Image (cartoon, rainbow, N blue to C red; front, top):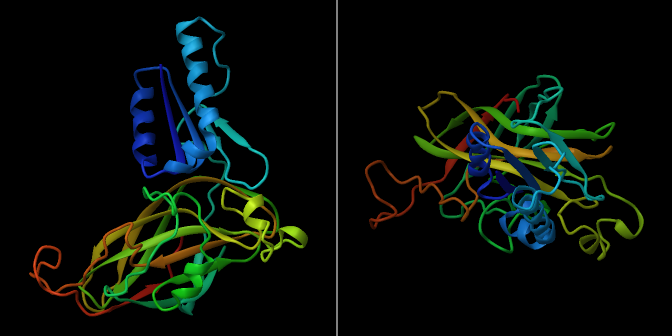
Length: 308
């Protein structure tokens, strides 16, 4: 018997999912995915992980009654009481597919249900690479879901922000998230990063965004008025002058319960430093990492009418 345990923002999530798929072909295998990053699973769910481990040993070594729950259990990202989804396989079956399209100019735009027109652009400077907050790096202070509003407000030149209209009803997003981007770049090679966030609708009273109790009441990241990361990924691409490059990128897996009034938000940029080593944009043939050449000049990145 094999029991694979992971977290939605764990840096080892993809490897854990691959392990489950391979192991389930030859053995009785279970998969449990908790909220949080690598440290968050240990710090917030240690008791539950220990209980699951004990349950497994008692069932297979001591002859206890078998676990009747389904093979795959996924904890929903929500600020309410713990909620779980169960299914018999991975990837989980989906009832529908949500497709959204980008619209806007400059560095801000919208996520629409219908195709729109987008001509968005930002400047990536390797001397001042875009930082990051949260997700799956082994950094205790930045592990897991994190508040993104500080990053969004401070990086107005090198970070695209695209937001949906407030949801008219609750919505569960479960499974793989992917983006298709049409990109032009002034550099011959550059990185492109996409990050999906959820913006929680502001609440009144003691849970308002300005309340000092907001952070205490919501240890998992989601909270009144906050923008919180769900999943992200980065890709390196080559570009030709004045030609548009199509990038199809899986940015990870998630299971999040959105509430009426929440918004989806997509970040697009070219770095998440130092989680991923910045692209130096150095001239071809020069070794910035091991040599003595300096990083190259800033690059202009244009994103046109993509969908996600």
